[in-house]
Figure 1: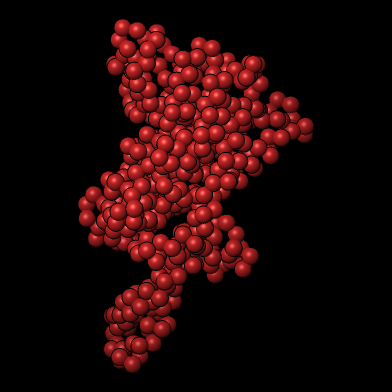
Figure 2: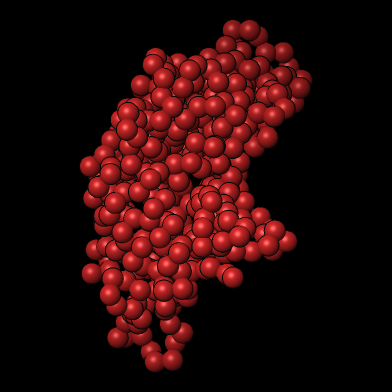
Length: 430
């Protein structure tokens, strides 16, 4: 016997059947006969507390980012209240077809039992990821996978649930479920997504972006900031998830998360200390190279007093240009080409920021990340495996408690745009 989610048109919402799809409405001025565009949808996927606890986050995100063309627009770590868990469980139970009643009940019970805070007050963590694009719900379902009773030979590990979810039934009585872990949760249709998105946006907007007192928290834990840089988001890729998977071997917990697009001013503040370092270390080396090239080309000997001017007139401009390239890499704009208003505008380059928590968090993350120069990083480190050069080195991690505080302030870690992205979409649909 197979149990599976029904087709989109068969899902029930409350007491009625969903038959109307959210489709792109053709403008009146569009000529008859032109191909109708597919609806742009916003949908979500929630990584369950157990998947987070087992450090499966990176593997799940790797599948999501590499197997869809959807735009990744938001992320937030949530600690469900009992009230939200109950409401979400009820919505899960009423938005599936009649042939999936068993799965609906399993999902509802799972959320009620595993999402609320524990009796001792410690909070469970769930990670909500937000995506936008054509047919977003169906694409996320395809990557997530469906629940079914299949023999082992039919499970190939292609979907997230093939790999990370479990549905174990009693061998003698298939109506009895021995173990159930869904791994991820995602809505089946755009209509069902709309029902739930408003509820999640209202809740997320009222919650802190960094969670305290989560399951597994220890006294005197340290926090550090990790940023997965723009070079990982240029095209659909498993790289962001693979980086997270490598960082998971630290045993640290993720307690905060956000998608962030640095403005030029953000980048200038964040990397401000780098400018002087580049001038100090790079300018003299460039000046020496310039001196050697001039002497070789023109067959002359440049006196030391004249060579000093090369630092000022060649070395420093070169170092400053390297700094501008760094700002452009992180924000999408060169600072010298921007007006003051443009410097404050949201940048075009996307980063994903995490706050990790645990004992010796700063040192542990930096050990797995590796040195700034990927060419000097040991094998098995993030930067050696994924970095290109000193600037395009795939990820950033804070180097001290003072840096953590400074960098969290610059990127406004206590603010999250996930709710705003949801409200914008809901306004579009009205």
